[in-house]
Image 1 (cartoon, rainbow, N blue to C red):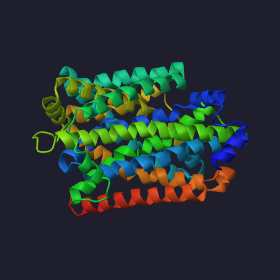
Image 2 (spheres, one colour):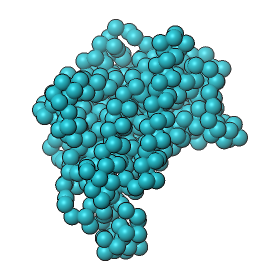
Image 3 (cartoon, rainbow, N blue to C red):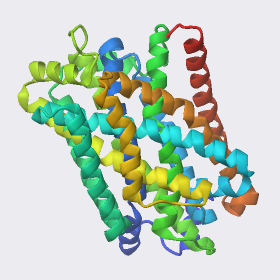
Image 4 (spheres, rainbow, N blue to C red):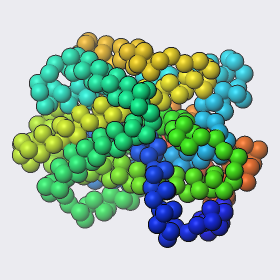
Length: 421
């Protein structure tokens, strides 16, 4: 359906101010999903890529963000048109054994996600207040429980506003750091050209992709859109909601993509050749020395907001996946307590936290095809979507994104199997 036809079925044009105000009120679910795109795993992957390869992998972030816009819009579209989330549709169409196996891989992805987010928040608390990592992980878990309690008691709209506020803090934290960095804009522009330099750059590209196109955000967005807008059989209302969600996704992911690119450019400008930048703590120290303590504090605040927001969203996503695939649920706060354990174990046994973050993003990258392939399949079929099935240009763009994701993951697996990375 074209934008012009959507305007006709809505009976209003975009220039109508009352209509604009109503559409603005519909914005929000994509900003919750976008939190997944600026989590601590992004920080680790992007800082490592910038420090080691400077501007070489800028193109990966641009491509990943374009893919993210496509898949997040399709996820919201699926929920709005079908009245079901992606996990619910999968759960209905799979036999029991396949459903359990699919849920198991999704839970592994959720565990990797949560590990990255809790560790990132713990690192931020250590940077800002000198708190031990294990204690910081506990604090992050407790605060995230408070954030989830907002969703449980005050509803999704209030939760969306909390996430938007945290996203604003994250954006200020990293973009402000970039504003005073000596970026080589010519080299940054050259980084738009796709290329690699050795197997390590492929590993980092896969890590960046896993940190940007997040499987749990793909599962969650369909549920968020459905929970927010409800199911409808009215084509006029569906068309209006799709238009609102298209802009919701574009706005939210432009913000998230800008933050990711800012992280890489910050590292590329300030960290190459500086010892100790293989960790977030070392990168923070180098940034503080190069750009001043105020920028170091702003960086730490952005990282903390990232960890707190993303771990709450990740727990919400895991609950949605369990409900859809297993047709059962546990209270969000109980799930938060259970999923906190693996991250605390990693922090407690002394694993290098930045290394754990990067590896978690590679795990996420491997899990992406399990989310995006069925999403594209469902949204392209008239049997599921009716007249709202993807038109050919969108279908081709979505298929191209899936092929690129699967190819990069295949390269990563091959390199890992041969010991090249």
